[in-house]
View 1 (cartoon, rainbow, N blue to C red):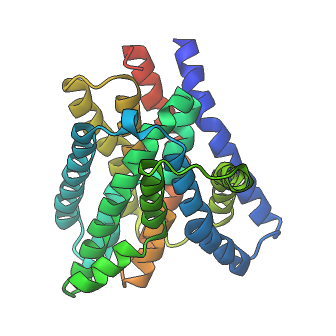
View 2: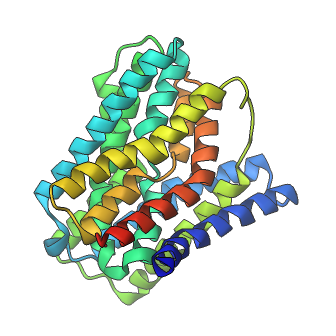
Amino acid sequence: MLANFMIAVNAVVPLFLLILLGMFARNLHLLTDTELNHVNKAIFEVMFPLMMFYNIYSSDLSSSFDPGYLCFGVGMTLVVYFLGLVIALIVEKENRSRGALIQGFYRGNAVLMGLPIMINLMGEEARGLTAVMIAVIVPCYNILAVITLEVFRGGKPDIRDMGKRIATNPLIIGAVLGILANIAGLQLPSLIEEPLSDVASAATVVALLVMGASFHVSSVRENLKDLIIGVIGKLVISPAIVFLAGYTIGLRWIPLALLLIIFGSPCTVSGYTMAQQMDSNGELAAGCLIFTSLFSCVTICGWIFLLKQLGAI
C-alpha cells in the first residue's frame, strides 16, 4: 500500500513544487503582472503549440490512434459537461456565474497537467496516446466553452466566429501540424528537432512556474458556494464518473489512467481568460483555477493510489 501511495506522490508532487516556487517568486516581487501576462501569452501561443507538435510528431500514431477509445473520451466530455450544466442551472441564478461554473466543471488542464503526470506515472510509452487524446479533447473544450459563455451572456453563438476561434487556436494548430507531419513521415533535421525537443520539455516547467506566480485570491467569499461546487465537481465528481464508466467497460493500464488524469486535472488558465473576455464571472473562474490547481495535487494522488490498489495500472 505504501509503495502505491509513493508512486502517486512522485507523479504529482514535483509539479506542485514548481507551482509553489512560482508563488514564492511572486511574493518576492520578482515578476510583475505585466511580465506574467507576456510570459503567459508566449506559453500558450508559442511553447504549448510547439510542444503539441513535437509530442505528436515524435509519437507512433499507428499504435496510439484508437477511434473507439477517442470517441469514448469525447462522449465522457459531453456527459460531464451536461451534468455541470444541470447543476449550474439548479444552484446558480445569475447567468454571468453559470457560464464560468459550467466551464470550471468540465474543462481540465489536460495539456499542462495531463501529459507530464502521465509520463511521470506510466513512462514514455504513454506519450503518444496522451498527445492524441489531448489533440481531440482540446477542440471539444473550446467549442463547448464558446457556446456556453456566449449563451449565458445573453447572446447567440456565432458559427462563423466560433469556427474562427477553433481554427486559430494555437494548440489545435500545433496538434494538426503534428498529425500531418507524422502521417507524411516527415523527418526533421537534428538542427531543428533538438530545439523543438528542448522547448517541449521546458514548456511544462515554465507554465507551472507562471501558474504559481499568477495566483490571485480575490472575491472568494462572494463566490464561495460556487467555488466549492466547482472544485468538487472538477476534482471528484468528474473523474469518478469517468473512472466508473471506463473501469466497467474494461479499460485498464494507460487508457484508464489517462482518462482519470485528464478529467481529474485542474481548471485551465485559458478558461479564466475566456471567461473574462466573454463577460462571464472572471473572479469565479480565477477561484476555480486557483483552488483546483492546489487541491488537485491531493486528489490526483488519491485517484492514482486507488488505481494502483485496484491493480488497474
